[in-house]
Length: 308
Image (tube, rainbow, N blue to C red):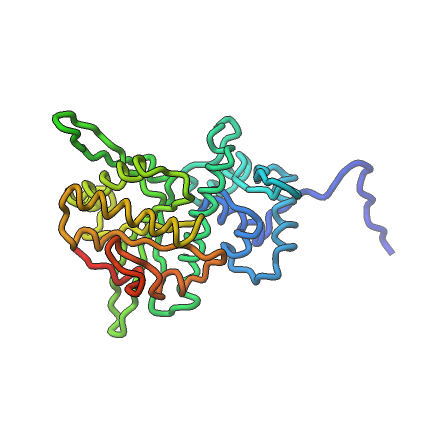
């Protein structure tokens, strides 16, 4: 019997990208920064697949396809947040995947705790949106644009303080394009701009940004920036629950009253406090969203907002 050729001492089996590795890399590219727990949902794996995903990410880190970034925690072991490394970017580009940007270790802002937490919270909502079709067959997410990409084409509005003009940049946290599938086979687009709140903005800052979004709606900036005929702003509160949600709604009411806006415009701003575990149907279909002027008994679904 012919014996197998012995492998030279000190050599190892070359690393080969499998379909599972590819799925992880594509998910990280799509959302820019993800934890292992988020990767389970983003890749469509079952909830008990965390150990498998952790093995995949370790292999990709060890072979320099992913960058691991420890997420600061008060106690316990810090979980890693993963982004594409140069090798991962080159692999995806060679496979024909458009990689529009990736994390660079020199970008100090993107290492900060607040930045990481905010991006991860945005991605929780985006992953839930991508999974909506699994629990609500009449709806699906056709596409989304992440804040990192929206920053490349910022939209500026002009606001006035007395006789002084102030340009303000409008950069939402994400643009989501949902589709409603009708029984007659037709499809209705439902465009949403996501604003993720983690209770870090004070009233002055929030109202200034909110006023800019009022101007964005009034001058129909969404048509130029996004190519949509209408838009709804969805403020998702990830920290401090109903109290923070209603605080934002109160600030929005003050700004709408000060600028004497009509009610139709206020109905294009919706507010929701996010549960700890995001259920796509509950978040996007159930009546858990409030306009600035709704009372506690008048929640509505995200897709019920009045259109222009």
